[in-house]
Image (cartoon, rainbow, N blue to C red; front, top):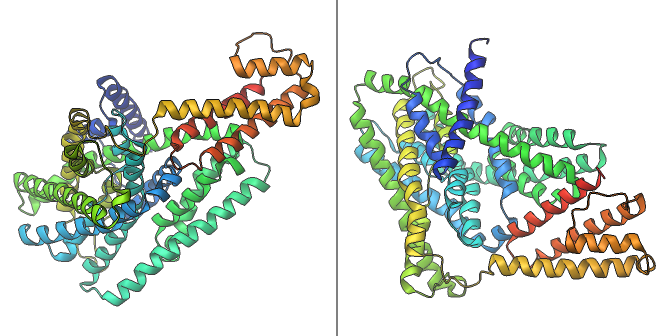
Length: 527
């Protein structure tokens, strides 16, 4: 323990330094992480870090999925549920099927079951990687919501494929009607358990005398509990965490106070950032053992790399084909919601960009590492090292090739210029600020009209809100004025929640303003 602990701390420090370097280079940090994982694997003298495959999902997936479900706009997910659902389920299955067929045909020793196992691992694009890469370019909120929404849900669908493929590899058989019933229970039961537990957690936060520290500690425990309970009942733990996370995210203003929301945001960002980095470094530390296992099986490294390149090409083509099929189907069956740019060329470039945005990442790594070393009968799991190696190659290539070129293509082709239905960020902010000013005045006039007339303190309050003065003397803020101010801030939250019901308003702008209100409320506590 005393020898491994400094090494684990060094891993965390390395992740932080890589993120700082990525910021300096103006590239997405997952790209540097995967390259660092490759380099770390061939540094001599580093200790071997092994994690029980049965624990990989439980350690890494619940918090990653929970944080992602809190970050996404549920309003946008509902708005674009058709295309998100098709990408999260139909496209994932088509991608897994394509990988299974190609692997079975071109890779010696790969059965259809092993092909589906590999397909389930590499099919889902990574939400963290996509978000980090698209942050360097301006994309519409609808496109961002589609990419984030499908990245969140396709983790569940791909891991369900992964579980069924594991059973098929282990037993050598696959009973379709049993699989269909099991699939329904995994989906419906997983979502139901997640919603039920999330409701119980919300009630616990509301009724127990929690503070910011205990609220944050509970949110760190809750995704693990959702996942564990669902898995014990043979449901999808992933869907339980996703559905529960979305439920709690939509009610964050109800059961968390401003201090809990502000501090919790920082804690969760740091926690997820470290988890992502550690997974990439772990696969790097296992690479030498994986390569040695391939050589023991008589598979040259160049051949294994070729298999990885082949699977990566299949992944990219399957997603691009699916993107064009989706837009063609939308133009035929629901032309009113189809994205149309002022330029016909840009309209047909949009599916290509969506198809090119399928970078793989941490979920694929976690799934590959979760493959058991041996089957239930003690026999070595077939092709485990090759599957791990192909997965790493697919992640490396999609992150470096697609990840580095995607921002350039978006800027070069001006793909998202001229898309209708998008209220500009500037006009949205202006509309929100004007609405808030009017709401503040009306609120004070309706509820505190007596105090308004000739009341110096209330006049100062209005002036402070309108001009945001930075006066050093806060003695005017007595307890009565402070209570009115807190009530005013809560009223602003209610106004913004109502404003957020407008489908044309970008929810991210609303969330930023809510965060500022939380900061304002916390500032009052130190006056």
